[in-house]
Image (cartoon, rainbow, N blue to C red; front, side, top):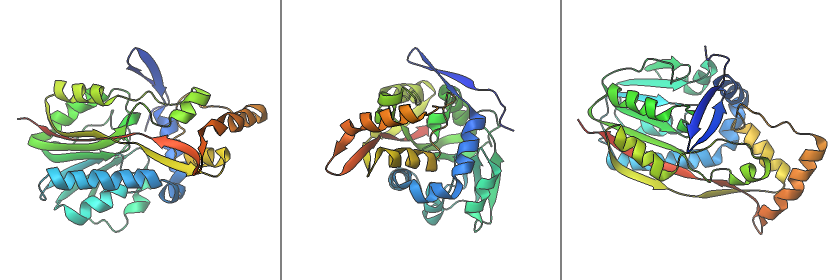
Length: 265
């Protein structure tokens, strides 16, 4: 379904591989633990929802959500917007366990970059998922084509300083788009940007081990070159992580970017 090969993404002259099968496997394995541990992702969904309410009409008959996962954004969205046709996408089929009370859902399971998008959409939304795309500009163009004239694109993704502590100590992680690069890609693909804003959120933990457990529980460790820990490297990581300690605990930084855009014509 997802293909077994990694795909290579180039950002700012650097190449990063994203193994979609591994991403699906990690998020499926995280399953219920994601609901419990993805506190920051839930906060980001709430903020994105507030922006969507601010900029989009309440009636959006046909909507596609990319990367719905446990439904943090979906449940909020359904509570306010008037949607007749809701299409939900994610990499793995078991995600439907979070939507048992949803009666009218069309499922689009698999890698959104490989799937045919529904047409004549009033909106495409996504929370904390587009950072996994290997060719975001191509997807943005396809989203533009799938939207009705004046249709909306609302999403959150992550910026360059996301999980910066982990990348600094291990060299592992995604290469994220900057706000400026995202803005350029949206404009080049014909979108009118209504809002683009970034923020920083810190989560705090009682031990560096808890940081790693949090990352595993939220499924975000699925870069293709998975880091393999030894007893020695783990102890070194714990030691090095002391530099990110303050009175609140051991810090982990999230760098969300919020976008509300509209197809021009």
